Image 1 (cartoon, rainbow, N blue to C red):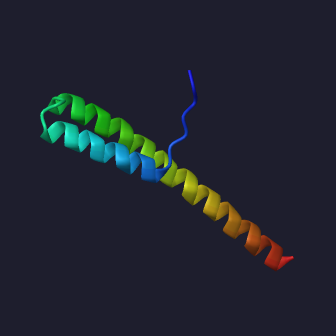
Image 2: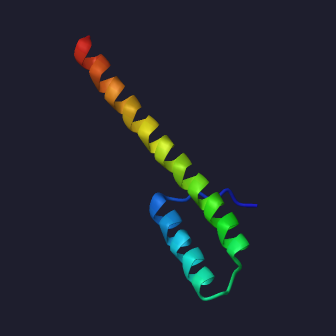
Length: 67
């Protein structure tokens, strides 16, 4: 099985797809909730990872400035 890496933009696209499938009755409310929960969890992980990386870069820059 592949190890997919998603961007926030891709997760947004998938969330819209779930919404469209729900409003057109292609999936149940329960299925939409499950998919949305998983996608929101992925989105939160992406956001946290991006913030950690940005913070590390800021800290690195500040440490070089203080030397």
